[in-house]
Length: 447
Image 1 (cartoon, rainbow, N blue to C red):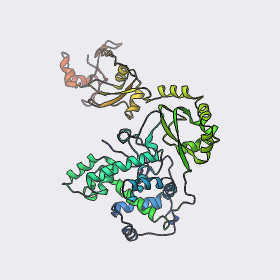
Image 2: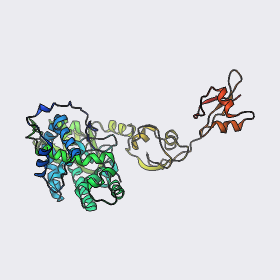
Image 3: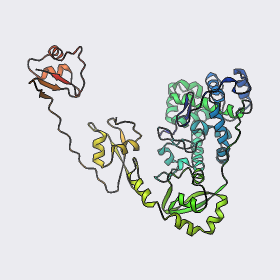
Image 4: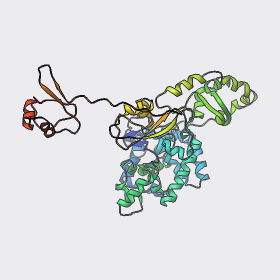
């Protein structure tokens, strides 16, 4: 199981952050700092999670407090939005309070962050991992982006990882790369049991993960000394939940409540569309507390009006958008020799673009034995796809010359054996070849 979770921020920038920031000069803050000063300061804030200090950590500290100060100020501003939520769940699960800084390494405290690999939310859960922690995902809803539910899931996972390794640095490394990679690094190191002892055996991104965490702890703890405190912290609107069932157009709901739709979206980052459809179950929607009296007084009429438009349009989009799983069932297909995405798509009556989206493929390259998720409508059976008859390898050109089309696996020696009076040197001479390298599809004169 791959737990998750790509590093959001690198020395050069952020993988999920849409906006790049310009480097700031060293005199952009009032204090010059030294290696020894930082080491002394970190020794004063040691908690349950060790804060090892070395050159790698110092480099990340320099990045956060000097080279990308504007990013650090922004995440400090966002911390007032999400730290109260995270601190509540850390206390509930009896976990160290300082683990709240891990959400910054994961997502930059962006509840709607999504990585290229498909990890999403504050805690960057991959879809499969999210489902294993009961984070519901469908075309309308993705609870990986719910700050409350995702934080509860992250606490459960971190608790399991700490129980597994008995060391917080190793637990953090496993959160990033999965426990299997940490166990492999432990074996390769000769069964060492500390992060810095197995450091060079870990995946590259994981080697940066714990140092980033330590650097973020330093930057937040000493934000005032480095003039990083934001002028205007972000605050979450006071809200409470209502329960809805069936279809609700959230834009119409906001309109009939005199509410800005953008505010409704901010309170419900787990709702992916402008409408929500829950069929026969109730689902919570967050509303600002100041509109709740009006909603409760006119509940039935408001919900009736909010369900009047948009249902058919969203269902059409759900059925036809690339990678949609709406109304479909998952089957797993194992790639066989000779398979290409096009024939697999024909077999299951889906699009190549769907298969790429479902399996996070950037191109059309697949390998024998690879498992592909295919989402089909109930009752759909795979159909046989007729294989194209291969073109004859030898043809005649307009001048009557014999032309051979190179087949996969061919060598000049193989081709020379097939035809009387032909040898490797003759083929090279006829085609002005300087060496014996050929590739499938290449045209060669053979006589």
